[in-house]
Image 1 (cartoon, rainbow, N blue to C red):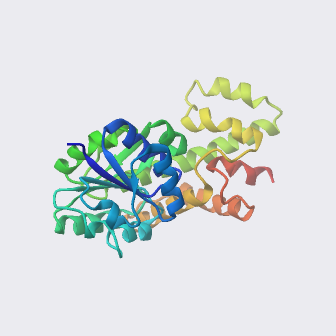
Image 2 (tube, one colour):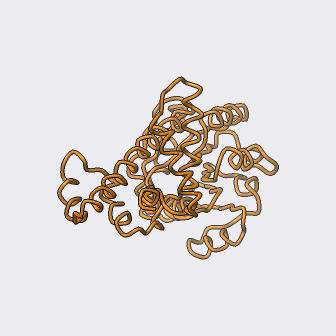
Image 3 (cartoon, rainbow, N blue to C red):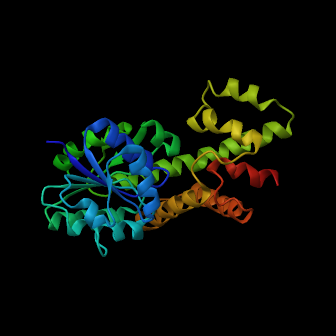
Length: 290
């Protein structure tokens, strides 16, 4: 019998991820989105079905996936009014791809366990392009046996998926990811800005230095957008600030020192004031060139 799955949240990430799940896994997929038009569009493209509430989508599902905005959105679709946990059957598994706090992951893991439901926190990296191409990196926290059941389905839209520890570990790993990216993007912005001020052909410069120790995904994929001053190619500044806020809050709790991350977060606040809330993260260069 085919696996029955539900998907909650059809944003720029969830929409293609749910599509890959439907197309590749053989599962039947029922989707829920806060705006029903998006759910209708998904069903039109991918077949499957839609439901009016998370609870209705999750009823009788073996796996329920979510990719929503933040901690409060996640609580709403799980333990809120008409939340998925109210109808999920014992032995079913909830996989959360939202980038959220480790606290909410642990909270929902405990709430799920009390109902006999498995819970995996599984935030992703790779952006909209990674979601559309089915090549995301997925960082997971949870129980070994639950993760083992979820991993084959996750791999329908991922190229790397790994259990990193108990509940909350996936979210903590995503924080590491965003901390690393913040410094890289600022370094790349300064590199491109400096080179342009010095009169260099930065396309040629990057062609050379990207093959050495300075090379990174950001350099390969974002130097052209920085040079062109075009910033509509991916992960938005508003979202990055949300993520960096989660990182800085966790650091206050665990005693980690994140001076560069805090500084880059301030730089992104300046980009927001410049009108760049929906620009992608490479727009850090814009504040250097204003």
